[in-house]
Amino acid sequence: MAYCNENIGVAHDFLSNLQIEAIQTVMPMKQTDPRISRRVLIGENSGSDNFQRRFHMVFCYNKASETDSGWMVAGWIKESLGKALVEKPLLAGRLRSIGENNTNYGEFEIVSNDFGVRLIEAEMPMNFDDFIHLKEKKNVEGQLVFWDDIHEPNTQYSPLFYVQVSHTTFLFGLNFHVMS
Image (cartoon, rainbow, N blue to C red; front, side, top):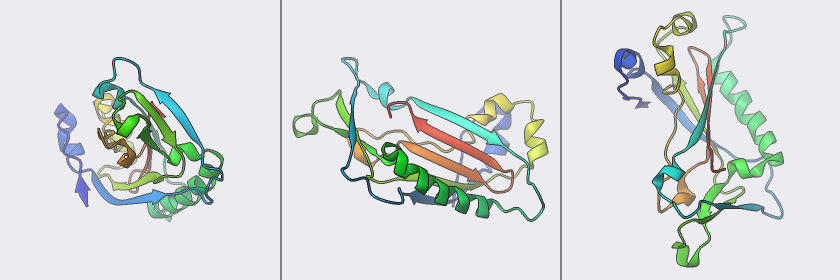
């Protein structure tokens, strides 16, 4: 189990209790044949900032009934995402350098079906109503979705897409690297 220990001021106590319960990999239900790739040009000013741009999205929802379980939602998401990735396999891909000996900084490609999408299952010690009425919510929302930087120079080991389900609060988060 991992903990988020990001210090963002007043909401720090809340976030320090965010627990990552499980990390899974979701692969497309079938392999793309032929394997596809898309070229990505970073440009002359290729620096680490280009690798760290991402799109965060957080959806909050209430339980439909008391018997609803975040674990079941995670299972449904895993199955549905596996089917959706058949249509968009680049979302499950990785960024790979295409330069000579992988040293041509700035020329990359996204290769499909490499390692999959990361599905994060988390627990948040706050109920839905308390979260919605949190005054520092703008400071907290971006911290609720797990993300990890693209690690240079081994970009092929960094997922481009994360999906997170929080069990107790029913929070659904997406994190997608802008490069992809």
